[in-house]
Amino acid sequence: MCIRDRANYPHRLPYARLYERYEDLCSVSLSTPFRVLSKSNPNYTELTKQLIKEQFGELAQGHYLFGKSRMFMRNNMMGMMEKARSRAQIVKNEAADFIQGCYDAHREGMVNNPKIEGLAR
Figure 1 (cartoon, rainbow, N blue to C red):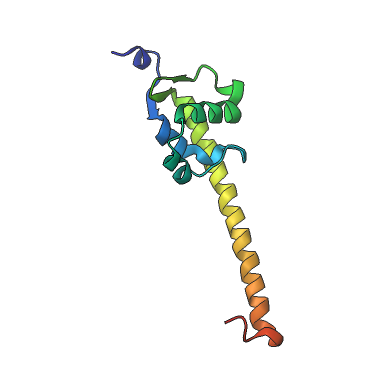
Figure 2 (cartoon, rainbow, N blue to C red):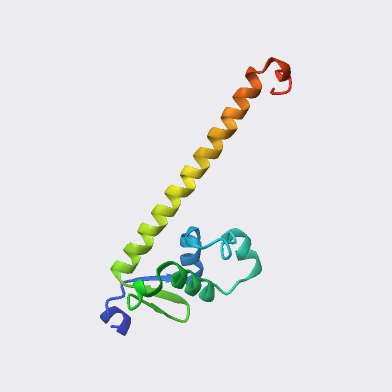
């Protein structure tokens, strides 16, 4: 049995997969979409370390280990990451809904305006 298993780190993810899944947690300075990053062969180990430090700081210390090719996490760390990801996705979806609503209102205003009715089609 591996020492990581005995130390209760049941969750393990390769750095690239982890970064892809949790990229929404990155700040603006760090958030280059995964599909763009993957073409440039980035250092996912460093990106993941920066993401964890930035998002969780001292709060998560002792709940994860960085390996050579993957990150090992305890149950509570995985829970914190999933909860933060869920919150980030809710904010992202609300922003998208707001933008869509603004566009729809704008579009409706164009259709109902007799001066520009022909342009809206």
